[in-house]
Length: 211
Image (cartoon, rainbow, N blue to C red):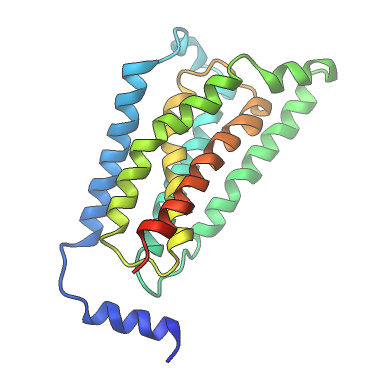
C-alpha cells in the first residue's frame, strides 16, 4: 500500500471531529488578534500614516504582505488535509517574490545609483528583523495548534507554511509602523525576518504535527 493510500484510509477511519474549517478559521482570527495586540501595545501606527497612505510605495508594502499572508494561509489549510495539494496557491505564493522583484527593478530605475544603498539599508533594519518575528510568535502558535486538529501529510512543509502565514500577518502590521517604504528595503529585510519565522514553523511542524 502506498503512503498516500494509507493516509487517506486513516483519515476515513478517524473518529468524527469538530469541523476543521471552523477550527482553522478561528485560529486565523486569533492569529490576527495576537499580532495586533502586540503591535498596538508595543509600537502602533507611524505618526504620518495619513500622508504615507497617499503614496504608492507605502501601499505597495501591504500588497506584498497581505498577498503572502493570504496565499500561505490558504496553502497551509489545503495541506492540513490528506491527499490535498496546494494547487494554484503555490503559484500565488511564487507570485509574491516576483511582484516584489518587479518593484525593486522599478525602484532602481527611479532612484539615482548613489541613493540605492541608502534606500536598501533604511533606518529601521533592526526593528524589522526583531519586531516581525516577535509579532509572529502568537500567530504561529495559533496555527500550529489548529493544525494538530488536522492531518498534514507533510508536517515540516505545513509548519513552514504556517510560519510564512504568521510572518505575513506580522509583517502587515509592522508595515504600518515602518517608515522605510522603499521596495529595496522591503525586499532586503522583510523576507529575512519572515524566513526566520518560517524556519521556526518548519521545526515546529516536524516536532508537533507528526501523526
